[in-house]
Image 1 (spheres, one colour):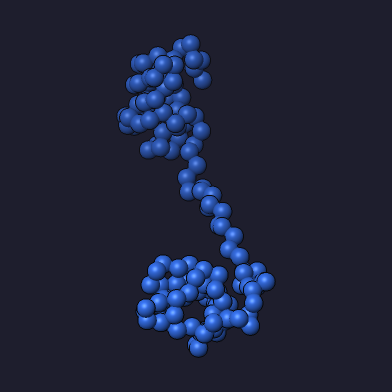
Image 2 (cartoon, helix red, strand yellow; image 1 turned 90 degrees about the vertical axis):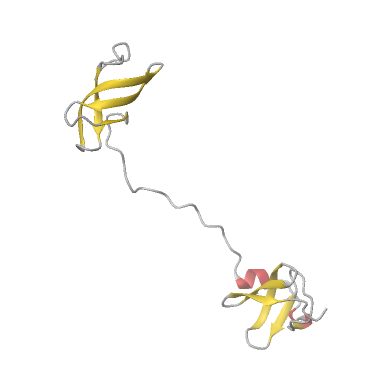
Length: 134
């Protein structure tokens, strides 16, 4: 390994070549201050960014954590189910309204987009028509 005092454009450095898939000798082509940024493989002749001496790890990505979505029972806790309104496309519903749909059963309005509402039922979520009779 070359020390940072010996690093200069045109100088020698060991670097990982992705084409050769090996740690090989390279010629330094470009530097920013004391940092090597571009090299040329002395074996295959390919110019590439300086990646250091370690083989780059490919395909290892961590998935973003999924947001926790409250379950049906948690969302319905504390709601007055006896006051659930029968669903009709002509009615206007607001977020957190509990409704009873003829086919899907008991549901909770989770979003209101004017003429459409998102309703969470026990097994799935549906988008329904809202306020068409107004």
